[in-house]
Image 1 (cartoon, rainbow, N blue to C red):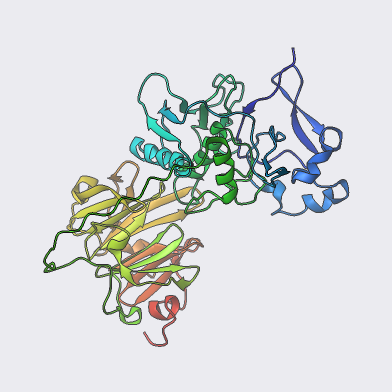
Image 2 (cartoon, one colour):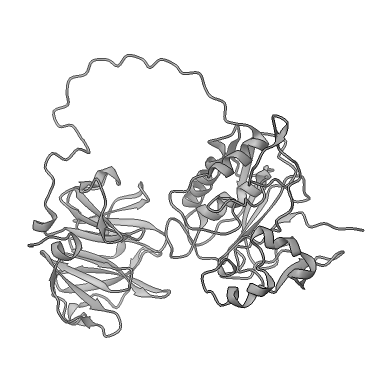
Length: 477
């Protein structure tokens, strides 16, 4: 009996060695290694294999395509030609050959991972599916029991489909095309470090959007930067490329346009006595500001002062800043005392005896009392998530003392507080703290900051320095 591989196994993993590919053995579910030139000489044309004379040069490059994480589904040839007015239409998206029969689809999450809460996981999958429904007639409704068109599961190792996961790293997820024996199944490796919106692990939104494209009938796009590209790329905000859009609309059509309705006339309202606005009439001067809090969020540096926020990316102040902090995080108080981003990408804000937690710009907790975290003080002056490799800890600072905190368990470690003298060369009373992209901790008091060496465990020579001069290009601070 002839068997054909029809499963879409997205295994965001390194490819096989450049001189060989993992190929299915006819009549079995196993794989063997076969030379590229023997089995797939035409893959050179599709970015899968270098020419023989280039193998040595290619393997010596650390940043070439072979070393990039990618989806491991075979790149089947397109099943249908697309013709436009009597001539072939050039396209780069690829179809497997089938589509789902209905456009009103249901999905069910069978099991959840441990890294993120259930509601956060649900929001991620809603957003990943909405990326496709925004441009097609497709609708997606979650069901909590019974049958569903799309079944999402987080599982480990061997799990019943002859496509085992391999623990952290390597294979991340796989999905199955329409009109196959496991149509609608999407499996994610439970043991991966799933995150959202940062580089601390594997971004679930990016992977989920790609897998759902396969479930709907799309193969890998040959367009670099497309969501359906075989090569995994971290990119925010996540958007369909024109190639993704053309592919999914070829299968399901474009989203119907609702006829415009004239807006109702608004009733006259008196001007509010204290309107809330994002317009800043007088820009605060960063050169003359002692900041309330500073935090590294999504790889960008945010400075907070009296309801305003400055945003620095790649060492430069972003256009449009300072702006009101409520433009990003509606509901936070004007004068926050501390802020930090935890491992899962949630952002914590502190003021007085209360704290708030946001998932991106959506509030998911707060205000709640800091006493529920085990703190017996009236507030915290600074918060710092600091460490190296996978060993990160979160610290709170207040009046010459500090605590170590577990955001995952929402509790303090019992051996704390300890004295700030452990942080050699850093003043006892600090106003803010943050970790930079190189691993150094920065402690701020007034308009000055101290840079702390994670290896020598002491403040570097030449500090303190002025924040305004080093971060905002001020001549005088």
